[in-house]
Length: 437
Image (cartoon, rainbow, N blue to C red; front, side, top):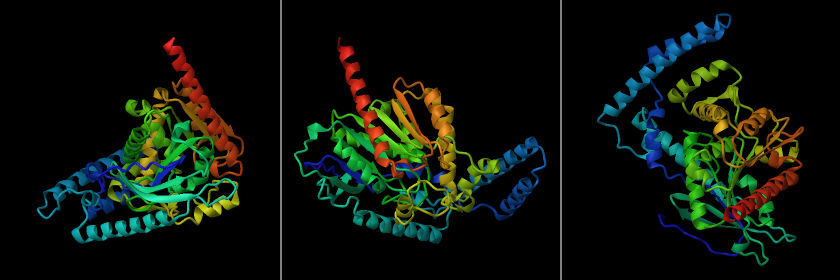
């Protein structure tokens, strides 16, 4: 299981998904974020006080802000006491990925949660492995084949979209790594992969933790920083297996935020030819400002709680009715209410990115629909205006919705992405020529 497999076959895309996250150290660092219970009396009184704030909207903003800061301080103090109590307990198990994720939970409940998560993971992984990602097409000669892949701690399904023609690895123009959006999975991008394939671009893709066939509770992301780190590790793996081939990162929605933050690290940017962002989650604001204030607290106290007020399933994300039916009937797409910790992580990463637009130097293409009601197209315009990148482009599609690659014009949008990658590769080659003169 620990050794690296490199499959050599006449294929023009590696579509890798359902990675198993190797995260003993990662989840160990996150143990402080899983306290699920504190002393009942202080908790109930603080919640009552919070309710009073919500109803007292006529009070001054400054008074409400001070009370909220006071509540946060008390909550954090109680959580620290709880952590000390649990860590001092002689019956506490040693640190492990599973145990660290349930710190502060009693032994029986911890086992129950762990078993439930494992059952959920195995169910989704079986669905992912059995899913036909590409339907055989006699006209273009594409078919899907699968095998197990174990490399660098990532365990998943490797799909080869193989052209029955005489494709060679040395004909690859580049490789694009797909990072999907919130609540979906990498298998939804098979059609996009085929179009990239036809233009001599290889494709890798991975599922986040808690998504698709990956480990974790469905729809629950303990930290988007983990997803950023996994993206960097996956890129390193791809570069190692494909030396000398230019690599692009593609991210949709929250996946776009992940890609942009990953590319902000110099060692990751240096491995990239550029990044492509569709409908990136760059300016995310909850409906009520109170939510932003209390999210850090409740993401610690009740991280898995499903916040029904955030449920956006009713908001259309495509103008293609068939695409909507396909998305919401897909068993690997999470359609439940947003989990508290996941929502807090989205607010946190978007806030970080908004503060650091001017430090963006990676070459990028950002695409957004002007009628998107899930993420803000004006934030994409701000990114383009403020970023320090020398090579950057933006395309705004009038009247288009959130899931651009599932709009009726998906073929044209994909071609815009391919054209930009060709343009970037030509620019890079020209720059290399001038540097050698």
